[in-house]
Amino acid sequence: MPGKRLANDIRALRFAAGEMTQAELGKRVGLTRQTIAAIEAGKYSPTLECAFRIADVFEKTLDAVFKWEDTDHFPDR
Image (cartoon, rainbow, N blue to C red; front, top):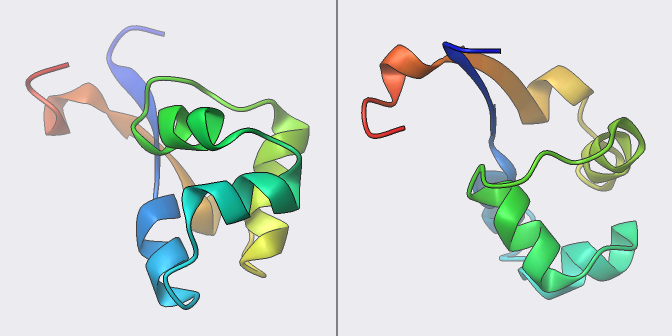
């Protein structure tokens, strides 16, 4: 949808969880480190199931990890 993008707080949550690495998070949810990096950077949107798995790792709700934001907040995108 034009004007919106899926944003996330995965990086902050990883660091709050004892500086968890992308590789460790990937292993816990069944994804590669590269996929976690792409999701974190907003270059790839996870499946709904993967999004729930990521949220479960941090014991957060889905909307505490992922946000649907206006691209006006991101002028370079």
